Amino acid sequence: MKKNKMQKTNAIRQLESNAISYQTYEFPWSDDHLGAEAVFEQLNVPKERIYKTLVINGDKTGVIVACIPGASELDLKALAKVSGNKKVELLPLTDLEKTTGYIRGGCSPIGMKKKFPTFISIQAEIMDKVIVSAGKRGMQIELDPLELKKLTKAEFVSIEAE
Image 1: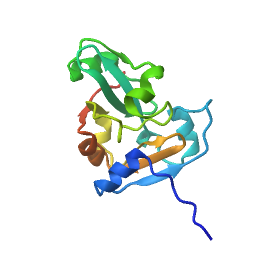
Image 2: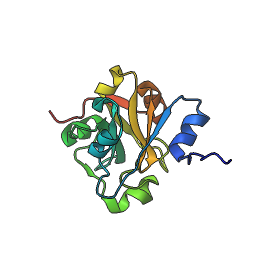
Image 3: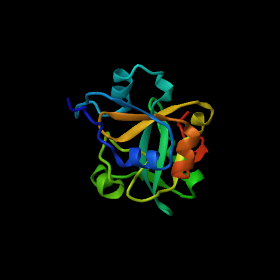
């Protein structure tokens, strides 16, 4: 009998090639439920461990990536300041796939087409595990936030709206 093999995404390949331990979560998804709220509903894990990945355009640096708790809102002014920009705005959805290689609802901070400056919420620094997209809708990966920081060459910063 043939085993159902998990599809490996770029994010998973990068974790494995860097010998970083992780756990995957898979769940059914729909176009109507692509946000962090839908992930909260599907996974039986503490809500604060689930992080969303946002891709932003900076007026000076170009594309940057932010990972914040799924229930939080991004503080664009704070992100602009820590990233060396005067102004930042969300990357248009029409540019997401050609820029990152990922689609809405399946955008991972790991394994994008290029390495972009990455900023992770400072809240992650004290957590033992965080959950981010695995690079495919309906698939998440749980890993040590320090490993995520190292792999993405990220900084822990305060970028959530109060």
